[in-house]
Image (cartoon, rainbow, N blue to C red; front, side):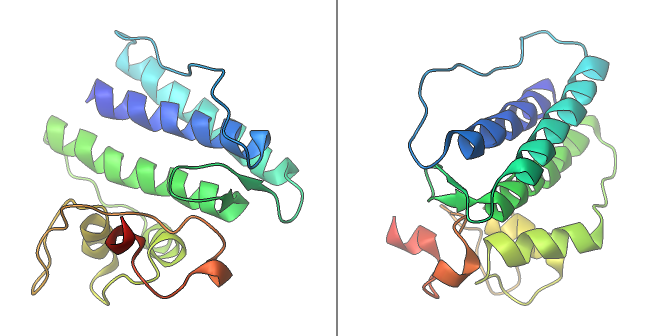
Amino acid sequence: MAEAVSHMAEGTLWYASDLAAGERRLETMELRVRPGTANADLVRTIGVVATVLARVIDASPAGARGWHPMGQADASGFAAMACDELLVHTDDAARGLGVPFTPPDGLVRATLARLFPWAPGADPWPALLWCNGRVGLPGLARQGRWAWHCAPLEEWDGRNPADRR
């Protein structure tokens, strides 16, 4: 569980840094959560880095872009990627702990629509998990590879970017 939570925190902080750095990849920093961090501190860390990302997004000028391996993301792309990471890895952690996790439907729908416009018209939560290669859906096998569309939606070419990789 600690690995999944650390990954969420690190990814969210990377997104803030990538958006603030602009379109050119920034490779000068090593952002990581200290191994062995207590669970309560990990949860607090997620709240802090989510706040940092929200403030970077709020301060970003219209049209700002940041480097990401899956494309030049805009602020909404970074926000959606962070939401996706938080949703999917919270589910991972909950499964590891044997506790139920039911994400907010509106957040799932918004994340799905922003990052996976090709998603099947299934129940949103299983569809988001399918888009992330976590589960199969009726009539759709579990994906072996997946990708986000993190650039602005108007730049989407109508295809699943995982099919181009």
